[in-house]
Image (cartoon, rainbow, N blue to C red; front, side, top):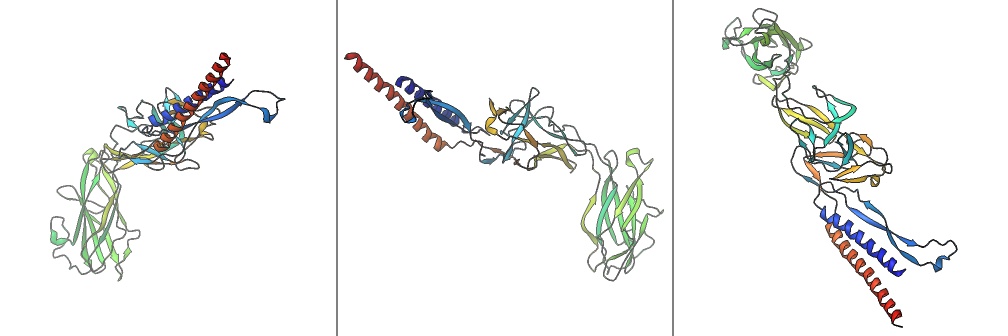
Length: 412
């Protein structure tokens, strides 16, 4: 029996060495979780034997438990490197089946889909052309490779200060070609439905302290716009504190020739002058114009936020959501089965996957431009390696000792 006992010890020590060696081999594997061999003693079954008289018959490996504590997070500055800070696993599609991983090294394939090094698709919620995320279905995530369509300008926001000490214009009436007929001027680009641009000029003419008239022109040479033939948009009045008293609301509506059809139709615009003041300071724009609309744009860069939203920034200065990464969590992660290639499979012991967006209850947040290193502690593993080696040597010595005893008996 002592031979069998020692042999079980050798098998256990060998299994322990296998686990430790695997940990050391994967010390640099992104997202790898270290494991530990756990053992249980064995006794012969005998219901009538007193506990004090029982002699063990060896050891067995009861389980190989993985340590799912988080590894350190290292910045890589790659757009599609993503680390999980907390609980959860990435969902990946493998030939239609769902598998799970902590390795967040992803790439954009030729067709725009987000994949790992083995070509498995990252799963999440898709976004439509307007950047609205659909949380109703988990699908393979894709980054658009085509240009986004232009959007037409409808609104212009402009804050201006009109100097109360400016003199009246030297010439009248207002003429866009005569700088002495107006006091202030600002020029802004607007976009038609095809993404073409044309300039809109807004002029301010002082009538008296507290009263100014706004005019508008577009194109080259400047053509008057607005409800009147001379381009007058309306009169702005101020109180003695420099605040607007009329119009209320502080906006003007006008139209310009539509560049999308060569001017055959008109493009309506609204000029919002909220925040405009009349102080004794120089005349000019007090904040950058806020103009909607944009030309067509190409994807310039993208990033993954803590909530898993992939945001794309385009060459036309627009940004929108391209999709959202989801995470799956399990009641018993140790019940997952290792599939290799940094992948895990669901089992009954692991429980049903709880799929949610990062940052929700019991789901970690994401960190873009970073990866989660393996949680292997090399110092501890090297000490464990020495311990396992000594266990193996000691069990070998048990066999050697038993062999010596047997030889003594044979020699009698």
